[in-house]
Amino acid sequence: MKSAVLVFPGINRERDMARALKLASGNDSTMVWHADTALPKGTDLVVVPGGFSYGDYLRCGAIAARAPIMDAVRAHAANGGLVLGVCNGFQILCESGLLPGALMRNAQLKFICRDVHLRVERSDTPFTRGYNAGQVIRVPVAHGEGNYAADEDTIRRLEGEGRVLYRYCSASGEVGDTHNINGAAASIAGIVSDKGNVLGMMPHPENHVEDIMGCTDGRGLFAGLVAHLKSAA
Image (cartoon, rainbow, N blue to C red; front, side):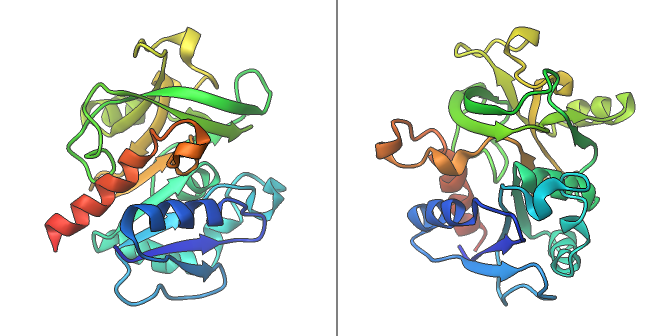
């Protein structure tokens, strides 16, 4: 798997992501600067990592979405290439038009930094084939604007097309307001594009891939991507 990790001013999870990708695939990722205009030749996966691009001073992801490299990312996605956006990366993908909706302030208007539970809704996508449908995983979140919002028609379409891949839940998999940490519509934690090749999610699976962290539930996402690309080769 040949992966490219985008780097914007203020992004701070690019090394975490690169390490997770290396552990899963055995290959180093290429760091791609926001002012570049092309992705490395042969890139399979583009990752937009978490952090606070441009300090979130305008609107989360709004400035990064207009960076020169994003034209290449949009072209990569249009050609069927895989794109993963985590936390601020999810915000950037929405701002750039690669995913619908927007990420708003958390319902409690507080920054949330802790482990949460997610229910995996499908296991037949490149981003979930490392899990079982209905499986509950534990991964960290660290965001102040993770409240996914979209109009009713968009939410209905996402649900009807099976494009909600990860949902906030209890440790036993129960979905509801009690377990919806940020007020996201339909407890949405991660969605995919209509072609199924672009995933945006607020939680950080890259931080739960090593035993030393006490939990390795994030491994399945990266292992699934590697397996998908091997089967497609």
